[in-house]
Length: 426
Image 1 (cartoon, rainbow, N blue to C red):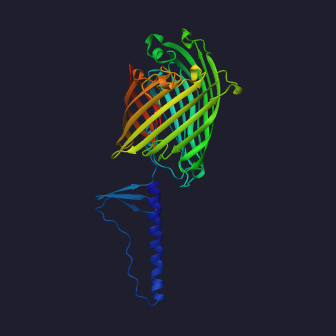
Image 2 (image 1 turned 120 degrees about the vertical axis):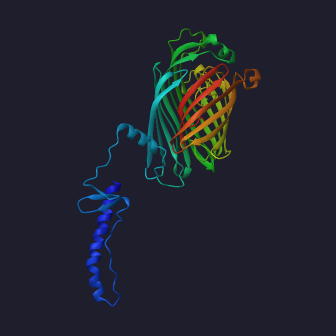
């Protein structure tokens, strides 16, 4: 394409030169202006290396004393490997001309609970009003994973930001079949390795909230929550303590947030405070009536060149007859990475994480974190004796602008685990 444009430009120059050559004597003879200087034909130094000379039928490349004539130019065709490399080389480049910037990535992954698997992640960036500088960018993530253990997960999550950030819609929907493990309820049950019980967990979940902007950075609005969980194929159900193995929960509530983050998906500065209140009453056909309150505080600060310090304080308290499937727990891809998700579960949970994120080279970054967390049946029963440490390191690759694919390895008290996911943990 570049060569064709070059040929067209050179031919246009030759055409203009011909017209000027014919017209200039006539114009000079018809006016009293000084005689126009002779226009010399375009020439190229024969000693120039690789300079093109354009004729009507070919392109000549002069190299030293030799002339190479190319009668036709054929664009180079890329093989499949080159196409893949070219695709990923451009995924993180801003595309302001596009209303929807969507890319996907896939590959193998490994985790202690799911073993070897294949994950496919898709990420989309867009604006509710295209090309509007006053409207922040929305994001959506499509994720799926399939494992040799029979595990599979399909879901979508995102943050839709309305025109000029007047409202926000946060959502997460997923379905999974997971060969899971259960240790019981409470710290003592979780610490007992002999309690490990394998079972198959089927889950379907929907969480969504709609928040209006009350003031700059302050948002409030209603939320809905639905979850279905079923446990089957367990060796023994004694650890469930007679609770229903199949739970269906409908919840209503509200979200109150304060957000000054520069970018939601990968923040360099700002704070994010979120309070979520959920109610699961009996009149909504809940067999287990309970409520939950969840608090999150995130802080981001640029430390030095290429470095960001991030911190998170998080906690959840449930009241009433909370079913086993809805008990707050530690572990997973978000908090206390490295612990088996759900091993430690109880009516209350709290955790804190401090993380340093350092850009290394081009699209590569690294992180290191330390943290701690615990569970308890009541807020007043949290003790230092039940404190669980957590630390780990991770690698980041910028899949899209300010949106990373991450690989983390976390360590805890007698445990370690791997996490492959998109976007930061918090």
